[in-house]
Image 1 (cartoon, rainbow, N blue to C red):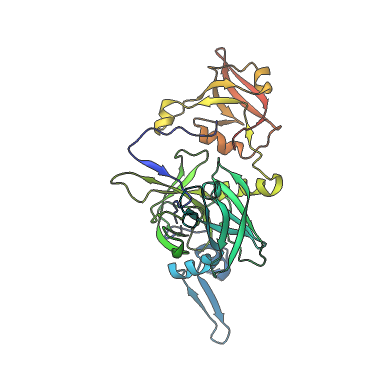
Image 2: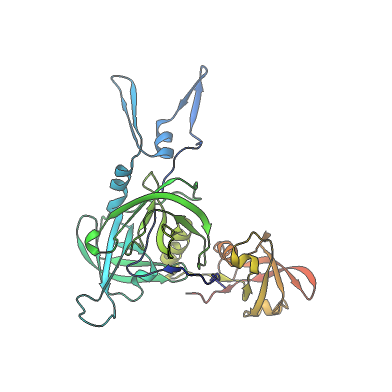
Length: 369
């Protein structure tokens, strides 16, 4: 089971071709920098400084001085924007086809024309057109799509494109760090617009199969598929949705870079996400559904795979851990299973007929798309 349950509220999560985005960067706190101690003095490598904090530095050989310019928001936007594209196309909306348009945003994954965006941006889009930051226009073709993660690839016939730079993994993020969202809000004429805010939260689960990043950067229709970047100009997430409610603002969410890598690696290797499943459906506890801290296990609601049946797993059994890790939510399970492929084996701990047992199960292929 890949989709988490969301309680009914007065609000709504919006996903649309003209959808929603968010932004990222760091301030304050301690960093580990490469350094050398000579005669009681500590010398920090200049490259280590710029790698950690962003910005730029230069050494003047004649004056024997080093000048460091901290990263600022305009320079970060200037650095990240060339790899951001706008995407537009037709949808079946009736009326004049010239105006039955839907648009979103994307980022350049590879220099030979591979564009990453949201699945919901391009799912029903026809006659796709991609416009790069320098104003060049290309015909696009939807290539790969994974609705579970809300990620997709579009291919254009181009070479030597400026490739987006993703933050190194594992992501090192701090709530409160500055973030920047770049996208195509409201109108296609507003391509490569930028908004700023902070990283509001991590490990969020909002009607999603995997964890999301939360930001308060201004989110506007059309930013879906665009980047959320830190102050080094690195992409930490792909903007995917916004929570909308009366009196509630600035609740945007992004697919983190680790999930992006997981999905796109599968796209390029297999053509689709070769997602593993335990072979049985699970239900979360009430506490997990409403967001309360809990260590309650998951309950089996149906058994699908032959491997699970051979182990004697039945409806009503309880799952406590997978690969030695306690599992209390479906999102936790989905995150763990990103490290596995169908056909591989993993240990699981369950309560079967009142007995706590550990078994090896052969993972099935998930039917999530």
